[in-house]
Image (tube, rainbow, N blue to C red; front, top):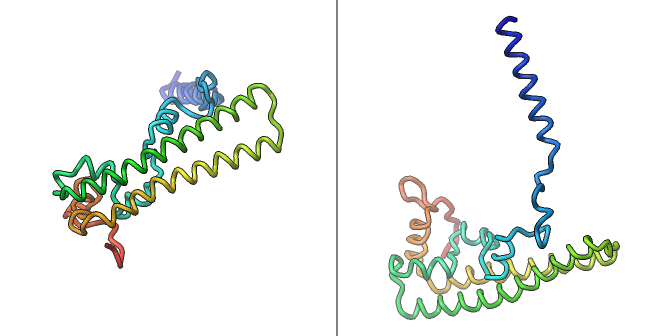
Length: 183
C-alpha cells in the first residue's frame, strides 16, 4: 500500500470518528443538573450577586465597578469619603442583585419543573420566560446603575488609573476607549 493510500485511509478514519462524535450534543451531562438551564456557577452567581458580565458595557467604557474600586482603593488613592460612598453603592447593588438573583433562580427552577413534569403549555411558557427576561433586565440595570454612580464619585485621574490597572489601556498606556464628552 502506498503512502498516499495510507494517508487517505487515516484521514477517512479520523473524519469518520469526528463526524460520529459531532452527533453528541454539547449539552451532554447537563441533564443531571438541578436546574437544567443553569450551571452551578450560574446559580451561585445569581444567589451571591456577582456581576456575571451584566455591566460589561459600563466597565469597558470607563465606568468603573464599585467592587473593583474598593479592591483597588489604595492604588486609586481613594479618600475616606470616596470609600464610604463606594461602599454604599456596592452594598445597595449587592443587596438588590442578590434579591433579584434569587427570583431568577426560583423562576428558572419553576420553568425546569414545568418541562420535567410535562405541565407546560404556551401560556405558562410565555408568562415565565417573559418574567425571567424582565428580572434579568432588572438585574442588569442594578449592576449598570452602580457603575454609573461610580462616575460621580471618582475623579478623571482615578478612572484613568482604574482602566490602567484593569488592563484597559494600550501598549503605550493610552486609553483605548476614550469617548468625547467623557468624565
